[in-house]
Image 1: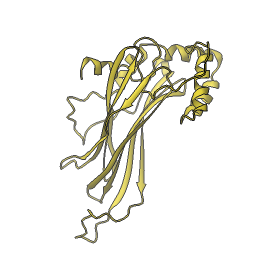
Image 2: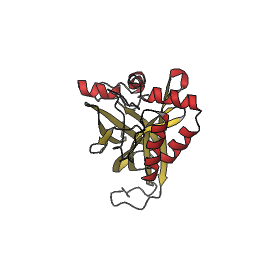
Image 3: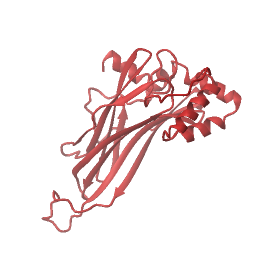
Image 4: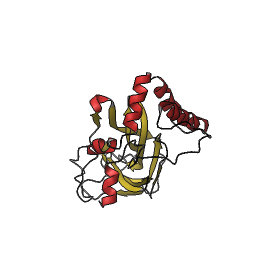
Length: 251
């Protein structure tokens, strides 16, 4: 990765002061207010605005934040506003060389705690079996072979004092038989973020089937963000086979 990309790996979770980049949606307009958004009162007002604009997940984050004690809210803001937050949590991200990975033996790190457990970064996997209509590309030469569809998503999110502040997701829809992946329909990506004053987007979501013997369905995208003059990026990938999730990373 480039120097800029290196910045992204160490700035992937909630930050809100100089050098503070995060995986974010574009911050929606807030009502005119003199409230300092780096304070508990200002952050609560920011979340209320997100709720009013119908941002998915805002109500949950607001409710969890409001349940914190006053002292925990102050500590929450200190952690959210700490430029070192991303540096500490950056180690959670998978260190893959070049982009070449061992698909069959890759170990996906699922959780990391810092600040005595007050900050937790978690990887979450979701597997859905879908109703599968006949596909014209199915090989019907062997009537004993049946085909099914799956959707696999790989998400990474972080919580501070149990309050979820960021989440990025990449997923893949694919068709499979009992022995192999036969087709990748699509890849997709989405994100949520409740760190104010930041901007984030993702590029094209690529999809493919890896060569034998792996024969995995893949989806991948690159997230890009800016904050206080800092540009950064992070690559997120998921892959799966006929049995389900095989691996995922964010780096």
